[in-house]
Amino acid sequence: MLINSFNDFFNENVFRKVDAFKLDEEMYNNILEDITSSVTDLNYSNDDSCFMKMVRIANNFVTCVYEGDDGDVGHYSANVIFLTRGISESELIATIIHELTHHIICEILGRILSRVLDCEKNVILESFTWHCTTYTPLMILINEFAAHTTENYFLPSEYNSYGSFIELLELIRANKKQYVLTDELIQESIVFGKYLSDDVISILDNFITEDLKLEIHDQFLRDSMEEVHVDLTLEDNMDDDFKYETIEEFIQLTYLLSNNRESIQGLNNIKSNYEYYSVYDNIVDDVIQLD
Image (cartoon, rainbow, N blue to C red; front, side, top):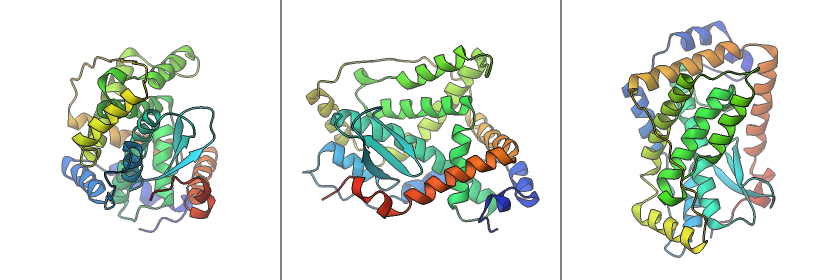
């Protein structure tokens, strides 16, 4: 199947495939294995700082660039991780892991969709899967919990935090007129986010070795980072079938709700970002240089 535009994407044939698809353990695990095996360049040396080692790992998935020296520590968009200049190496490392989680979740969804539609993953599918992860406050919440959980796994436990997740949850709860989340839905979103994080961890654990984790721990000590340990207790009574069914529902529901002029305009804006940042000359001045 050829999908070169959102007109191609929102047609009857695609709708039938998206509506009917079922995700199973074999397909899902094959996708995780494919993502893991796509990493081919881990040629860092012992002289590299742990931050530069993390950049080398991340660059197998995305491009890491510097941006301004104020504002948040960084963010992810369109296969690029933007890192704020001037913050400590510890903060840079934590940001890479956090934002890389957002990317890998999109990569998993994109590869699922590519298999369902029997087509190559391209900028149309990439744009839609990023749209999937940001379309509703609930999915943003899930995505943010997953990113914090992955980050916390690789950082020293005394620096574990769910800061932006908690801020986002409080913002959603305060805005009840627009969006209502029940406690049960919040709990399910946390469990689903934990499942996604476990899958991202299973990929990154192949490259962030125990020795590198020790280097990261030492870097946090050198940077004298303030301890901010926050733990969230999970009532995990779900299973893998819940994960597969939830992924199916998110893709199917987002597809149905996005087949309108306003959403397609938003998707084209996302597509423009992917196309812009895919041209190396547009970001070359800010790319983090490796020796």
